[in-house]
Figure: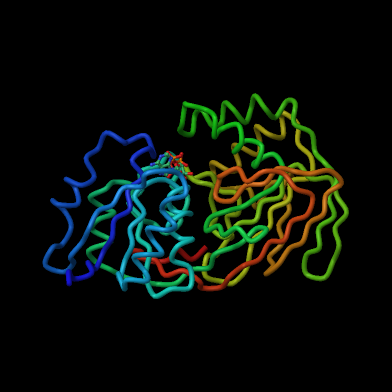
Length: 298
Ligand SMILES: Nc1ncnc2c1ncn2[C@@H]1O[C@H](COP(=O)(O)OP(=O)(O)OP(=O)(O)O)[C@@H](O)[C@H]1O
């Protein structure tokens, strides 16, 4: 019987802005082959990675590496939650929110160096209506942007900001009822973000204080927004000052329930999930092992 490799690399061949880079060649060159045996598999379709990751965990692989952006990271994480198999990341997306939060280098050689060091810790994950996320989930404008961005050929921060500034002119806040820490908040909602990690990706910080190991979600509520406030908010996010902006309010909690008058869009890790009028959002403390240089303490 063939030996189970220590590491399974799961490569999303469609992800990212660096798709021309020969990842397999870099792995051959920079992975510590004395320390680890490995295999490389490629996703064949969207939604394939959770099965590939789960199968590796069931076979007893020590580490599964997500090679892609936050969509791939989300899928690999889903297959590894509450197992002994750790997830590592070779960032290849345009945002790379979890990799950035965990201080994984953005270049493949640096990220492989972290993998070679093999330091493992545990982080929280979240779930929104039963769907797991590792960086952020949200309802309202950020979910709407995810839905538009999904059909957008252009990636990267600049096209993202252009899209936000175009769409903010017409998107309207909606009334919601949110139960947080025993209180009910009856409010307008432009965005309600549920942050496990501090950023959306691209160093756009939605929840600067988020600690990925504290067993809590940082809920960021933006009640209303116009073009001027949106410009301010984007600037505050990119300079990591949103905690001091008067456009955003924060709550730390383990669980949030939200009811909306009309169905609202939602996303998990930037993937558009559809529309509904009730949301149940939980934290799952220390449910995912990750390979990391160190966990950032924010
Ligand atoms: N072989 C495949 N063919 C088509 N889609 C795939 C395949 N493998 C994975 N996917 C899908 O690709 C989507 C995008 O992946 P990912 O987020 O990793 O890359 P990205 O969109 O380029 O990165 P970013 O989100 O940072 O811009 C995921 O939702 C995933 O389901």
